[in-house]
Image 1: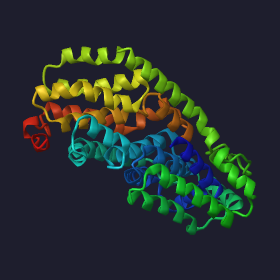
Image 2: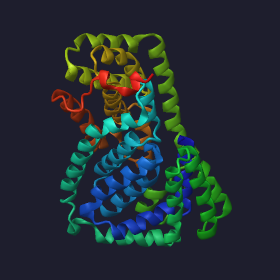
Image 3: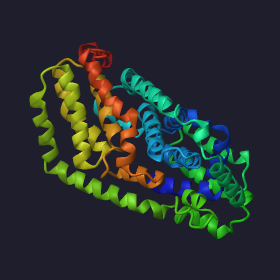
Length: 393
């Protein structure tokens, strides 16, 4: 997935797709509504692709470019992008984490997704309100009009801009809607954009266009801001740093798992569970600790899921409460812990350090809180004795 996304980012830049999105975005998007529009857009893209990675590497890169042009805070923008990307990744039936949480708890997929609606939408709505409030301070008068005009002229000077270029992103989204696996859909998007580059971007030779898949885009675009936006971006080589972190994290995670250290920690946490709210809280805390120790988003769902499933059944709490709690914790924390491969990918792709965007990733921060509060008030806490799918097994 990382290698294919690297190809996609490089090819979407050299074909003029990302520059076109930024160019039109600077004209269409009002600074006051930028964060709101961005959150909704990222949520939709991520839902249909089933991948936060794909969303961040495509529309996320474009949103960073628009924010850069308008002079809007990049950490806030990155937090907004990640909030939307995680919402879609969490709620999509095409997402690997959604299917994993469903599978490890033996909960039917759409029962699991319906259960998540209770905590996910309140957290998302609250995040939307916060971004709208923050965005209300981005008044048009504070926007550097000269910088925007300069960026648009620089984009026009380096790329052929056309609304026809937007067909490729639309094609990628349609493939995702048709349930084409994300890797294949993104790969088709990359190959199609190479063809588009050969048709529209005559200023680049064939070698430069094809090398964008491997090396990304490496050139001077005539202005500091334009070069910062488009140069040294994309390509499989630029993803190798992130991939190396992922590999090391997986090795470390396997060592921690096989030695029993992580399992012992989770079992130890069971001793402080007294009621439903403490059960949900400890489940989410286990997801966070597993992420921090194993550096793996998948292990943060898999291990607590396997460890706590018998405990939920003994307490007559439905497995859909467990599956939801695993996503409220495990799916959310992967890109917030700075030393994980997921966080490294976000920081590299968006150009914003994890520690900088973390305080503004409101959806990810609110999801665990909403989950615990709902448990405290016994909202959407079902009994396992009412789970009809278990009685049918």
